[in-house]
Image 1 (spheres, rainbow, N blue to C red):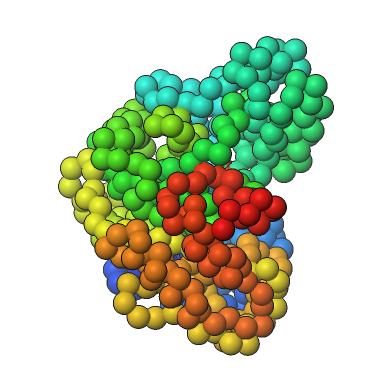
Image 2: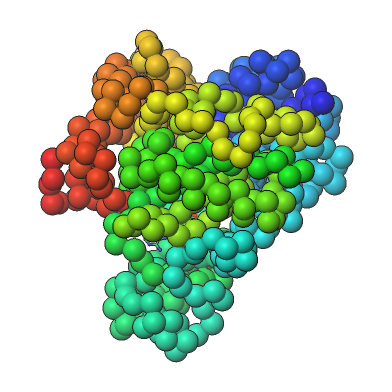
Length: 442
Ligand code: ADP
């Protein structure tokens, strides 16, 4: 059993992991950069170790410092959280080579799934439909033009090693293609140290629907239903909900069965998510996120389970606390991400309370929002009997949320929640652009 755990992360996810550890009687060790000395995760953990200066590359991304911190504080395991090193196979390898448990899949699985080209092959092998496009990296403009003609414009060029909504370029006409290829591969090389790109058909205004899975690596794979993450700005998620308003029971069963088959096929271990694009009743595999995701609380609410706890149990060689291959969903849950639009010191902090509301955050009055890190500062998650009631609870919660000293996106989240397309459930990934960049459908 894991007795002491180092959390190789910061912010709300570090706080979130510490909370579950406290419930499980596990001692926690936080790591912090010089900019995070007074942060909440540093205060909440049983022990805290400084791992370097503010810049992430010298602290939260410094593998050597993290491993040394875990060894000197006598930890048994490391939880990577989300972002930072959570999908870095070299980190997973280094953790295991030091005799520690990595809370996540094996380095080999992370490496295979982290490459968008390779993961498309894996999906096809498991009989899961993938978005139409190239099955091999784009090597030259001529063969790329041939593929684009076959699948039809617009197309999207993606960095094989990309993530977080970055490293993608939409190409609308043949004459744009050669230039777009050289820019996309140069950018891929600069951002992800790998210039490999591939091409997919660019679907117009699809839905983003993903399946959450837990797998013990010994043959038990269970899916925890879907999350609809179609409300996005610049390909980055803003609002997530479960169940999806466009998925019926039959489609859920089919997507769930496909996802379970894919994870069984690769002997996946841990929590993971398969992301799909959905349009007109069809769905296509997009990628696997081989870690816990920001939006996991939505699933926790409808499935009445603690995903971090299941991750720790799986890493300890124990069984998942869910039977069968599909979890039962109860009611409706929704998450709104609260992003800081400016850095600064939080002068007032009063999060929403009351029935059916959960807030995951690392903020408090006096907290410093640093420009060095991800701008997401809180997640408001609510649970209701149905979608309509859930939206009402969310609006009430967001209006109750008082944060002063920094600017946030709370007001624009309220605008989305009140918009006609969002309320009707009938919208796609362009909703944010439609509401805020011109054509107004409110
Ligand atoms: P990342 O790994 O950066 O998160 P993804 O491949 O998961 O990138 O895509 C992020 C978002 O980009 C999707 O949710 C969707 O909105 C958009 N997207 C990606 N591929 C396509 C596509 N083929 N057609 C239309 N939109 C796409």
